[in-house]
Length: 396
Image (cartoon, rainbow, N blue to C red; front, side, top):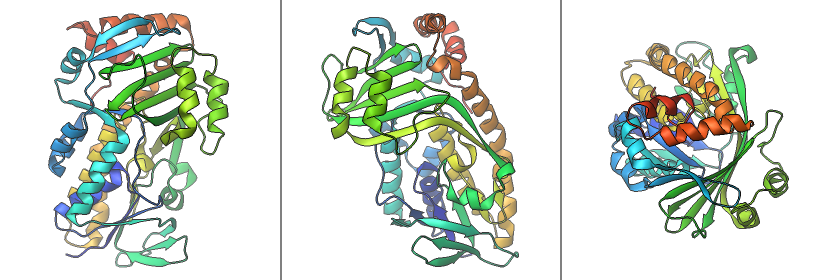
C-alpha cells in the first residue's frame, strides 16, 4: 500500500522514522527549515533502548565510529588543579554493562542523515512548515502549508520539529501539552584544534556555585565547550547577545574560561537553550502525530533524549508498517503511545529530580556531589550514588 508520509524535522527522531520507513519499503519525505544538515551540539550519553533501535537501523557500526573515548572525568578548581578524578571506563562498565556510547549530538544526526540519504529518503532543506490541518474525515488528506505559500496533501504527517514545534502548535490545544523549566541555561560550541592542559582522553569540568564549564576534545581536530548556568529566571534564549551574556555570567572564573570566551566569536556550531521539558497529553490527532522533543522532551538532565528520539522514530515507523489502510493509522499511533508513554514519564521525573544536583548553587551540595563522584567507581555503591546525583541516568 502506497502511503504518503511527510516527516517535518530532520533531527534524530524524524530521520530515524524516515530511515526505518524506507527500510520497510515506504517512501517518506523529510522537510526541514534549516538550510542544511546541522552539526555540533553537545556531548551526549547514548544508551538504553536507543541502542536496540540503532541495531534495527543498522547504525551500530556508525555509533562505534563516532564514539569519543574518554579515559577520565576530571573536576578542577578555579586554577585548574584537579579536585576529583574518576576512571571512566570502569564506571561505564559497571553502570551500563558496556552498552554505552558518548559522542556529539550533531555527529549522530550526521550519521542518520547520511544513512537516510543513501537509503533513498527524499530530504528537502529550507522548507518551513507554517500550518498543518488534520484530515476532516477518514479518507481525506492532511493539508500542509509552507512559508512560500505552497500547499501539499499527505496521508500521514509526523511532527518531529523539536521543542518549539510548529506542528504541535497547530495540532494541540494549549491545555493538551505543557512545559517544565528545570532552571538551567546551556551553551555549547566547537573550537578548532586542542587546548593547552587538556589531555585528549579527558573530560574536564570546572564547577562553581550555580555554574559549570566543561571542555572535552572530540577528535584530533575539534574541541567542545559546554557552559551551564543555574538560572531559574531566564537565560539561554535564542537571539540573545551570546558573548555579552556569557561574559556577564562566567567572566570572573579562571582556568581556561577566559580563553574559551575569547574564542567564542570564531567558534562554529553554536548551541544555546534552556533545560526545558515538554509533556504532551495527546500524541496524535488522526493521522498527524508528534515525535521526539515536540512531544516528550525529557531534557538533557534525564540523559536519554537522543536514545528516546531514535526509539520513538523506529517505533512509529514499525507500527505504521503494519497498517493495511490509512484508516488504521490512528490505532497504530495509539500503540506507540501505549508503549513509550511509561518510560517517557519515568525519565522525565528522573531528570527533574536531578536538577538541583546538576549544577548545585550551595557548596554543601557540591561537596556531597564530589563525594559521590569519588565513590562512583566503587563496584556496589557506585551505580546507586550515580543515579541519585545524576551522574548515571536510569535506563528507560
